[in-house]
Length: 115
Length: 113
Figure 1: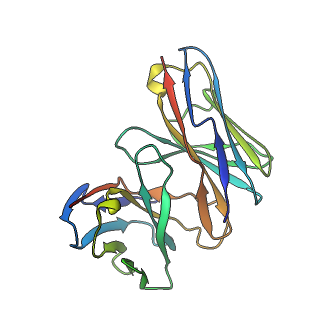
Figure 2 (figure 1 turned 90 degrees about the vertical axis):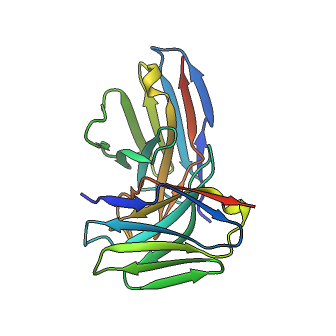
């Protein structure tokens, strides 16, 4: 089955700096890679995703890059703000289209943005 | 967008009792529902996958007789924790496919005392 490794487990940055979280996956059949932000006691919220036919995607301060050859993908947050503080999870799945493919999650990164 | 309503949001029960958690897809049909468990400061771990009208598929190490999953309709899936024990205390979250993505319920905080 799929295995997703996520680093670092904790990350502290000064407000305004950039944050980068990296993930690797094992299953070359995976084709959909979402990133979730989870605040304490709440559901994961999708912040950005990327499909395997794309190498990079950006949405304002958030970007994701994908290297299919190396089987790794990264989340980039620029101009960080205190409200970006949360736990971030990467995930991978074969379910880019449809079907009952499960998401496999990384272990999470606790991001702290220091004002 | 797609919404999955999960209830209850929190529950406290006595050891040995059973608790039912419901997840409803409000504006779409959820053929497949995924049930996750999340312990404090840990990631989401898949417990089982349920497909409407068929038996759930459980992940290795998850007791099917303890965590009963029913997915009788395209809009409702339930997870029943039977004979709950303190070690079952956790955050349980459901997730359904909504076209190309995944929609999560709001989660249920179960505390067994």
